[in-house]
Length: 372
Image (cartoon, rainbow, N blue to C red; front, side):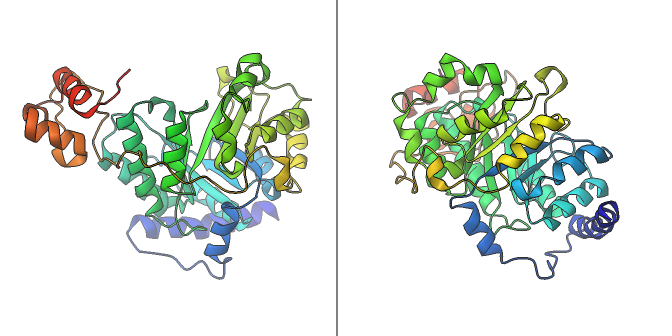
């Protein structure tokens, strides 16, 4: 029966994706739950598994195993080709449809490179919406965004993502994989820009997670500000775990203010997210979230603090202001206030010919940009 239902969903959703690819416009959800209610549930005290389902479309056993945990899993990350791919794939659309049938959310994976043109990014996000009806975008490798100009780009990503509607959400959910605790300004400005923002603040092995360095990094003495935010903003991912450690690791994740988590015993060498965890570990973490933990189990707050006043404005520049490619690669003056000043008041070459090392230096000098 499950296979039959999935096949029917694949056919129906495949047609939806084809229509989307042909710019057919919104498709009637046929009585799905109220979207505003779904969005409300995502911004309050909920918790569960956040599964990177980077499975091949024909890996039925992996998909079936992951979908069997739907009652514990608010988020499934769909990854057709390090992004939506070059064309609509009805097989992935079918899995997306089946996830939605369980009442959960589909997040589109986007391998994001800091010099990816904004036009490419917007097209990839639009394709995810049209082809797979996603509810959010997972921006991988966000750790690249360590400079102030990059935070401006993150602000733009949040703005564009939340300007789109998801299948089960009023707005697409922006999720950034930092893999480690990002700077306080990144957290405060990102969440301040949209309270839907979620941040992966740990992705590594069990041994690293349990080690002294990370334990100290997450202490309330080291990062007291982290615990002033709701835990629903944070995700933690562990690979290379032992098959018996799920319960204790999930408990520690909750004290570290992460409402969403996933643990696997698969290792980095064979990509830990290409298949589900082994059965024993899988059952332990699935059962741990079968009943939502009370909000007080977490280390964080029931409300978020107000955003700071020094958050940078969003920019649409094709690459980071601290980056020079060594080839003809000018920036548009309109993409950022600093670029506008440099190109119109200091050095027009930066927007007419190439944003080179001298332009980077001028941005550091005139805009107090940090590129270290």
